[in-house]
Length: 168
Image (cartoon, rainbow, N blue to C red; front, side, top):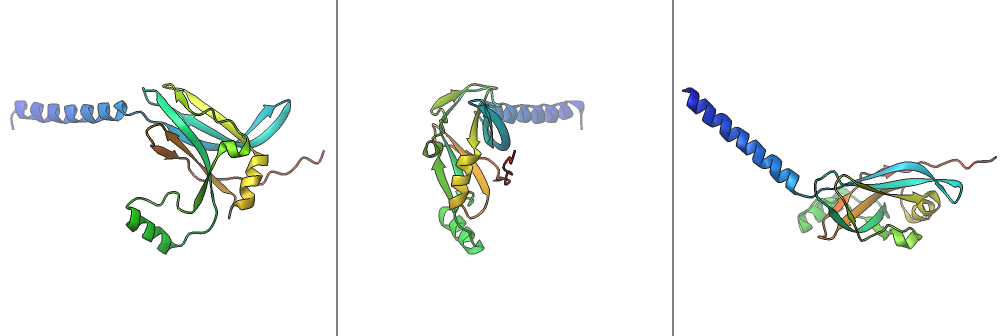
């Protein structure tokens, strides 16, 4: 092979990589995380789960809904396979109850525009979490965030620990 053929192959590979890189960066993206946190509200320290929505992309993301999810019953393998075959999608939220944050008197600020490189944080206090866990089959929650084009992102499962009450 001649040097010109190597250069042509190199140029084709490089332009393909740059094309896919630009396509990936052109799509608005956001990430959803759920972590344990403590915040000061009205002079009192309140523990709970922090919902964090981050926008690492170069574009503004317009969010319309933030919901908390909790399992309301156990799902069998047969039900998961049946759901996958019937709806032709992964059973990410099968048998998870969706509940708006407004049901727990928590303002999520939706709808709002999340600028590039910014984040939006919401504390879901432990008192509200205990209400959720009364109806839940286990102490696990997830969060779903939906943008205005109905694209939904889910956080990872978060196993909320039992926090000991302060006896002092």
